[in-house]
Amino acid sequence: MAIALGDAGAKVVINYFNGKEQAERTLEEMRSRDIEAVMIRADVTNERQVQKLIDDTTKRLGPPDIAVFNATPDQPQMPIEKYDWDFHQQMLDFFVKSPFLMTRAMLPRMKKKKFGRIINIGSEVFRRGVPNFSPYVAAKGAQAGWTRSMASELAPWHITVNMVSPGWIPVERHVKDPKALKDGYEALIPMKRWGVPGDIGGIVAFLASQQAAFITGQDVAVNGGMTVG
Image (cartoon, rainbow, N blue to C red; front, side, top):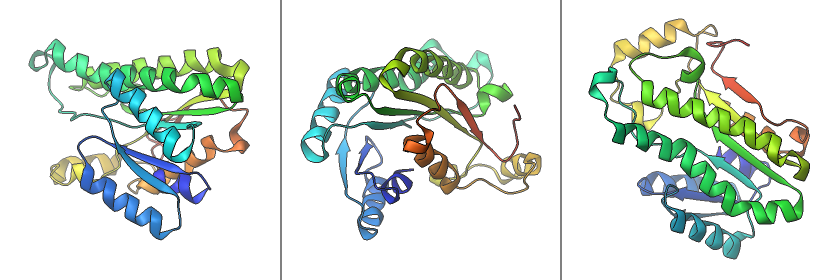
C-alpha cells in the first residue's frame, strides 16, 4: 500500500511500532523507486504518540491529507470461552480507537484544506461471520460502522472515508500457518488464486486519488469473490 501510494506521487510516512526491520526494508525499496518517504515509530493506540506522529509528519513532509489505518495485533482464533474482555478491548483499541485518534488529530488541517482521504483496512471476516474469531469480527464490524458514520459527517469538507476489506492474503506473519488451513481457504476462492499485497495497494491508491473524489462511505471487498454484494 505504501509503495502504491508512493508510485502514484504521494510522499509517504511509514509508521511502525514493532516491525522495524520490515519498515526499513519497505523504506529502502521505496527510495530505490525515487519515492520520498520516511519512517516514524508510534503507538497509534496512544493519544500522545498519535499527536507526536502527526507533528513529526508535518515537520518532515508536510501536513498529512491521506491516511491508511492498518495497525493490527495478533489474531488467534479460539472459541468464545477462551477469550477474555482484555482481548476484546485490544481489538477495539486497534480497529476503533486508533482510527478515531488519528482522524481527530488530522482533521483541523483537512477541514481547512477541504481535502482528505481516510482509508480503513477492514476484513472480509465481518461479512463472512467467521467462527471462533468473535472479538476480531466484532471490532471489524465496529470499524465498518465508524467508517460509514464518518463518511457522512465529513462529506461537507470533501473528506472521503472508505474501507478496504481484504480476504486472507498470506504475508510474513502467515508463514507458520498450517498448510491444511491455507489449502482449505484457497479452495474456496472463486478466482482460484491467492490475493497478493499489490491487489490491496491498487485499490488504496485509487481511493486516495482525485478519481475517487465522489466515493465515500464504501466498503470494498478485495478477496477474489469470496463475498459478493
